[in-house]
Length: 314
Image (cartoon, rainbow, N blue to C red):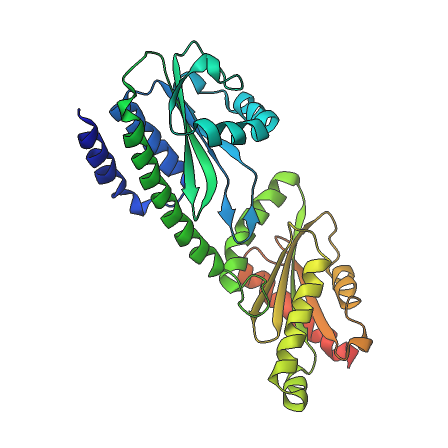
């Protein structure tokens, strides 16, 4: 197959990847294409995940051929030689080289190696490392470069979709999870708690006399109070705990814990908001699988306890 035919085939195949939802799926399909079109014996991807909620270090993805099963070894190599690799890519990226000229890559009795950058908005966000066991014509370097640019566009499209999808799970005012985000994340937290033998507490929180704040001081002051409550909750729970705003002045906490006393949790959260703040909160907690076996059952119990505590505190 001629190089222009390879490029056309690569673009045609990748145009069908819009339905993919994860980067791993893209890397899997891309590796199959590079093997078929360019007869690559082995290879792997290096990539840095980029999402609003988390930015991760560069990691190894989808090693195939002679690298298959060597994920940990490749990751150790990457971590130990990241600076040298960056310099090497700047000088030799996008070209085939003899394997012995690249001292920090697993040799695997191969002959040639090529390292191509995955660019995004002027930055390198990943690498494609290809290895082949026989010497071949160098003419396909530019074609692979074009294929890698096409692959980068696909990954950026996926990132844009995932970013929009993730942002749809957050409350735009306070930055904590919204109702959808809480429901989605709670499922994995419940699974972890079951594995660890822990309990899951669901807490419902609202601001006492919030309507008075809006009516007396204006909605800007009301918004400021909502943001303050959200940030205080986030700053006093673990990163694995879930903080969300269900709407209005109603917040929710979902926490994995070894303790079982909802009233103790309610008091701890209430103490975060002393009267000197100019407002107070009321809290009600429920224990999943003790007070209820579904979200609605637990939420109803927690909500009833909230209003009971609100009446006690009046």
